Amino acid sequence: MLTGGPTLKQLLLCRAGLRLCGLPLEHVAETLRPLPVEPVADAPAYVLGLTRLRGRPAPVVDLARLFGSEGAAAPTRFVALRLSGRQLALAVTHVAGVRGVDPTTLEGVPAIAGELEASVTEHLGTADAELLVVLQATKLLPESVWQVMPPARSST
Amino acid sequence: MSAETPENPNQPPAPKKKGGASKNGSIGLLPLTNALKAAAKGDFSARAEVERLTGESAEVAALLNQVLDQVANRNTEFEARKQQTVQVVDQALDALIALVRQGELNRWTSSNTTDDPLLGPLLEGFGKVIETLRTFVREINEAALRLSSSANEVLAASTQHESSSTEQAAAIHETTATMEELKHASAQIAENAGAVARVAEETLESARSGRGAIGEFIQAMQQIRADSAAVADSIAKLSKRVERIGTVVEVIDEIADRSDLLALNAALEGSRAGEAGKGFSIVAAEMRRLAENVLDSTKEIKNLITEIREATAAAAGAADASKSATESGEKLGSAAASAVESILAGVQETSDAARVINLATQQQRTATEQVVASMAEIEDVTRQTTQASKQATGAAAELTQLAGRLAELIKRFKAD
Image (cartoon, rainbow over all chains, first blue to last red; front, side, top):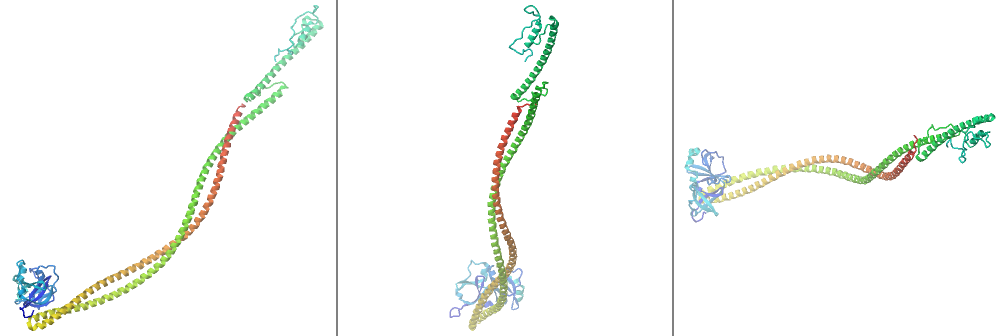
């Protein structure tokens, strides 16, 4: 990790259902226990609603629903992300910790992935012999959805 | 005898010589002589020819004729009387012959009489004898008829008696057989009654034992209920303590969770600090590992607490159920005790009744045996009676035959 080898890409590993995901550390603000969420009309199914992070409203994205794991266990943690002045809370099943990943081991997204999944996935890698999905934090919530988030819009 | 019959049949009367002359031609007393000779010969119809005589001869002749007339008249009367006597004697003989030959007593009537002073008493005596015989025959006939009727009645009665005796003997025989069966049945009943009495006594003992057992059962139920209450109390205390432990574990879990978050966020900060935060990240990672260990432990404790809760809830439920069961058991025991008391009373009555029945059936068996013995004697007497009835019937039949025979015999005598 912090050896004389290649610079490792620091990722916060968390699980969305059974899927192991990696969030670039530069977008991670903190981890929290789940907070109260207010539903939002006309939002996609994977957007649970709005919550307040440090007093500011932020949309909550259920990462398991985003990947289509409807029957996943209930989220136990929120991961607060900073995205160019915006805040986003990711509801995840579990936070595994911080892990440095060799960027050279990361690969692109194959064509077989779905459009949404492909849009939020930056790379695919391996962690402890398990598929690791490195997410594009900025793409987790499309702009069109950001637009229907009044508190988010006001916070920008 | 005919009137014309001469007194001496061997001496025929001399022929009448009217106006005959003597050898010397003189008439003399010839008319008288002739008349006397005829009379001597029994011919009293000859008369002396008075006209041929004269004088004293004529007078003697006239007197002789008068005497002859008297004799003739007397002879005629004698003949008539003789004839009448013969007729009466013939009638008596006929009546006697009819009586002897045909038994007829009606031939002789009271009109058969005679003026003969000598024969009259004889006929009268004969008539009395006949009349006596008539009366005797009538009475015998009547007696024979009565005897025949009585003999028939006796025969009918004897036959009826014989039939009744036979039926009675059969009935007594059947009754004896029935009584014999009844004797065996009575013996069986007595034996069964004895068995019932013994069983009732045993049942009584069992019921008494059951009453004691039920009392012990009720005491055991009460003890179990008290123990169940103590167990429930202990379970309640245990449950409270478990809840307390759960609360403590929740606090620990909360602290560990917060520690996990703090450590994670510290690790994030350390990572963002780069090389300067390396040590911080290591400590944070260690802290997080400890927190996760605590969380795993609290999770395990929570699982244990959940199991304990379930177990205590089950135990509490079981204690409640046990309490309810023991209460039900006590009620059932009380009900059973009441039932056993009733059973005891009933069994006691049954035992007493069975004992009385046993005694009564033994007496009945003895009485039945006596009845059987008496029936055997009655059957023997009845058999003798039937035999006597048969003999009486035979005698009555013979008597009837004899009465018939007597009636037949007496019918031969016609009294009317």
